[in-house]
Image (cartoon, rainbow, N blue to C red; front, top):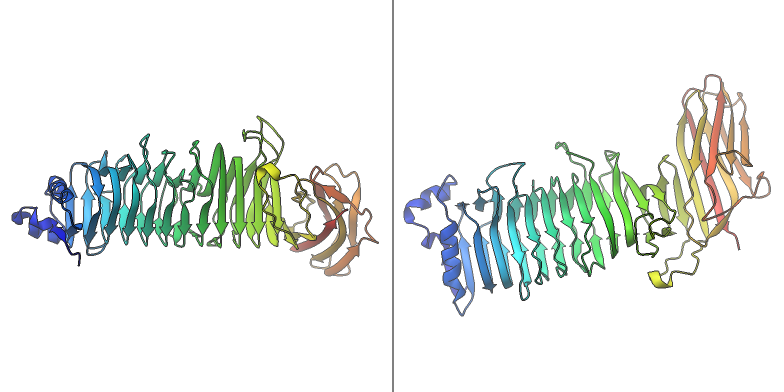
Length: 498
């Protein structure tokens, strides 16, 4: 129980309206009474608390408040104490010049599901410093935007969200205020967001734990918001949409800004349901992205170095992680630079479903300005995993991600081929798609259905050295006869060429 100056909102609302409010079927506009209670408490010298007993409080007009200091709004739980905003425009709360405020055990909701709504749950403008705001065990649902910091000036910083729930909002947090920094989201659940969950989060924001039901964009960096370094996503689970059909391709991270962005995904994973056919990571501009202990089984990572990044190279680092399939544009254009890639004990896939396993790598903390030293791994293993081949020729480019300055030599190939034993086949690994030089070739006879083979550096046709500028290898299978269900796996081992 709050001690000091506390008001029960029902002490302000006419008694004749209490029964309907408690029953959840009131149509009375509580907005002016809530504002009256806030203004009455603003002059108090002791603790300021506004209590919402169990019930539904309809608000038909925007509640505009300024100079809100030391306030606590609380209820009896997000499923019990509900503040329902009916207009499709404006904001439930528009608060300016605030400090040390908190919201506990409340639900903020729009009155209905309306695709055309532009309304906002919390519109914040911390003129003169908006700091130390806490929301705990709150539910925000059915708004266009749950919270926005879109005013041109002000400091909307040091916010904390603990165990909050966001459901059926088009957007969760939209920010174009360059000073909105140090936001912490702890164990929040974000369900069915059709737009963007976090648009331009401020620098040093932290997002720890919780689940995201994947529909729209999880994090989008599109404007020149300053101070956007050190963003962390820790222990986030990107789940399938279950029984809800998404209106488009879900994405986990979109960067299209020349402003320097540093972002880390740590201990994150997806549902592994195989439902994401589109691009889940779109990276363009000047960025430093790290994946640490992550497992992403779905989607595509589109890495684009042609976006104007101010002439600085972008960096992708993967440590003990499995990443989505990767496609990239790596040639300089519009001031862009090739992307530097650092892999350590990580599985990286390409668009053909092939994968590369990197072991023994070294993680080095290099800033963009000092990124001149080549990164060399002790060993790379690149796998063509369980390819299924019919009674037709198969051909695929084999992209092996190699960092700038790195050079590797193929030293061994482990090969597995299985069919119904009635067919013959020729399997070849070429230096390029033009089939200029063979690196390895195997002729499979019809007398056996399973073949295990290993070639090392002494028996390879070409001990082929690859660097960052090398063309992709080219892999072909030419079967004859009734091949049935063919399974082919090839593991290529590379070591640094010094």
